[in-house]
Length: 343
Image 1 (cartoon, rainbow, N blue to C red):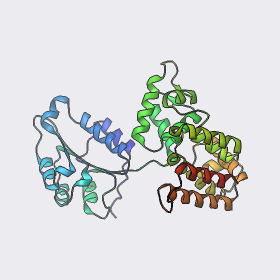
Image 2 (spheres, rainbow, N blue to C red; image 1 turned 120 degrees about the vertical axis):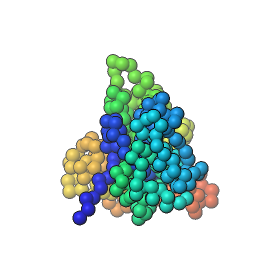
Image 3 (cartoon, rainbow, N blue to C red; image 1 turned 180 degrees about the horizontal axis):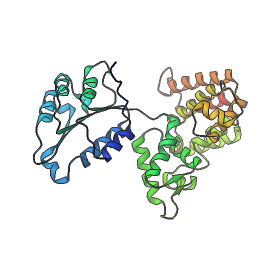
Image 4 (cartoon, rainbow, N blue to C red; image 1 turned 90 degrees about the horizontal axis):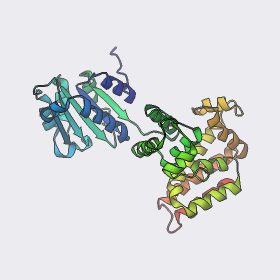
């Protein structure tokens, strides 16, 4: 039986590149452009010295080349260098892959060919992926981070910047910016630059000052108020959002509420509903502290009510996008949704 190829990870690829190990082929594809760009940029900056790049590095775009032209570029020999690099950006615009499939059967060992295929994946049934791997190439799918993965990403990124972040501050950033990793990293870089050398810990106050997220009126606080059915606090936060639309748009809050109640529905099936660590493990959360809102939510929302809320959120999301909604403003739809949740 043939040995099954291991799935390439971003961390694994970057580790190999940092060690100076370059594969002949990189197929980088998926919905999350951040990781594709990071790998591509690293290869562009480190596979060749600055002097070698003029004659040995070619960057082109999928809309401007055919697979045959890319294959011809890749077959060239490097000039006064150990290797050459060919980078194809926006490779999803290449119409036909036949000539590249042929190239992968016998790739040029002195070429590093990078195929950056964004906003989707190459059909796994096509031979091109298997041929690339058989030739010693790397096939990597860059997936969007899910909401519950953002905190881990934020902490991991800040660790590389020699900084840490408090749990509440981390959740404030994740809820406010969401899964746009390029924007997320840009905002984190701005915060890191503001930190003094003798104190590299990010607090809610720093997030409020540098990113503009109120430490009292944000999605994180709204979710907590809804979990505890603190109607006064919920209304106070919504009033703040009305006065400061950029602080909490409906298009940010609706997915946040959906994620919470979707997890809450799962929490109702947890074997030990009152044990923070057990619920955290059941929901794949980062620690017992992250399960508190779900334990509180289970006390305030039955399984049946949670199912009804999820259905209402889906209905509100559809209406916010114009489906079966001729004229109700999105803000009013959100208020109607939250009233339904709390009563």
